[in-house]
Length: 167
Image (cartoon, rainbow, N blue to C red; front, side, top):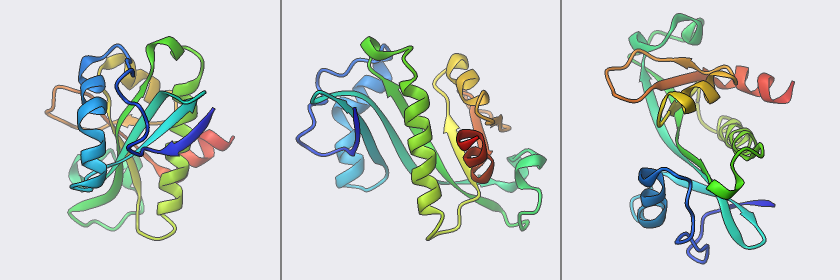
C-alpha cells in the first residue's frame, strides 16, 4: 500500500466507507476542494491501484476561549490558536478494522508536523462524524472542544500527537 496526493487519475467512484456523506464528498467534491478553491488537500491510500482510504486537511483556527486549558497552556492569548483541521478521514468498508485508520491518522499528523516547520501550528483539530469516530481520536490524545455543533469537535497539540504516535 502507498500514500499519495489525490490526483484526477485516482478512481474515486468505487470508494465506499459506509457513510454516505463521506462517500459523496470524496466522489464529487474532493478534487474541487483541492484544485479549484484550494480549501483542502486530500491524501489517498492506494492498494493495488484502488483507493482504500483517504484524509483531507484544511487550515483552521480555534477560538482561544473554546480550547481546553491543557491545549493552550503556554500559548499567547490571541483570539485564535493556529490549527490544521483533519476535515475527513475514511477507510473503504472492505478494509476497515485493519489498522488503516491509524495509519492514515499517523500520516496526517506527520504532514501537519512538516507544515509546522514553515508556518505556526499549535493544534490539530478533528470534526468527528459521530461518537464512535470521536472515541477513535480520543485514544490518540484528542480532547473535546466546547462546541455547539451537532458533531463532536476535538483537538490535540501537535507536539503531543507526535509523541503519542512515535512512542
